Length: 305
Ligand SMILES: [Zn+2]
Image 1 (cartoon, rainbow, N blue to C red):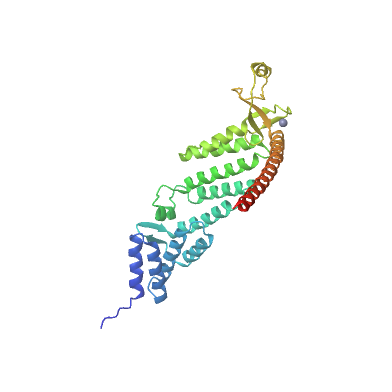
Image 2 (cartoon, rainbow, N blue to C red; image 1 turned 90 degrees about the vertical axis):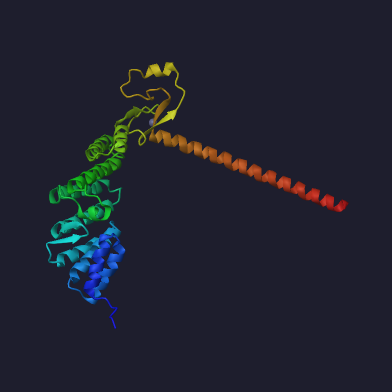
């Protein structure tokens, strides 16, 4: 009679085979079973399971911490995951930096300077500690051999400056435009279009004089808006020599600072609300009148029958 129970070593080898076929959840089960039955590579089995856990949720700090614990216990200087050779120490560094990156990315946007600086600090570490070496977890789980420490650093710097720019615009649009310009430069280095950062940088750098109150304002879309208007040449001429104009170049819009703009829109909303309530009250009164007429008609019909 043959024994159908599989030994730990056999389960371990089956796990390796499933990694080769990219069935990571199947492989994880094999490694956990191999470890519980006992196999020659007990620590390695748990390390593989922990790597797979990280791959299934790259934003899970707990999974990274568990993998770090395994890697520190491993006592192997290198391992093989599928076709990828991994230096244990490199993977430890990658996990440490990924944790810092997730922590920085999870910070609140309203704390924009701290968040931006945290992202830029992690960028510096990717550059210094990983540099041109490629990121193994991206290679294993995304099949991407082009991500390197330096590339990740560019991504994080773009995110960092973009975060600071989008936050700083509320207090200092000029600085904000500079941050967005830097974010744009990093995007270009990555080979991205950077369109969004360039557009924001240009909008934040734009300034106007408010047509209504005459105050200067910077950052179009944030601190001032264009409002559709009929601007006859006689008015266009008046601002011809102004360095900072109160109307758009095509003379289709007047520029209005946000306090004036919101005051006007709030007031018009209030007025619209009053008209809406009046109209509704009139409709309800009309409905009641019609209902009364219908009831009286029904009554007279029933009397005639
Ligand atoms: Zn104004």
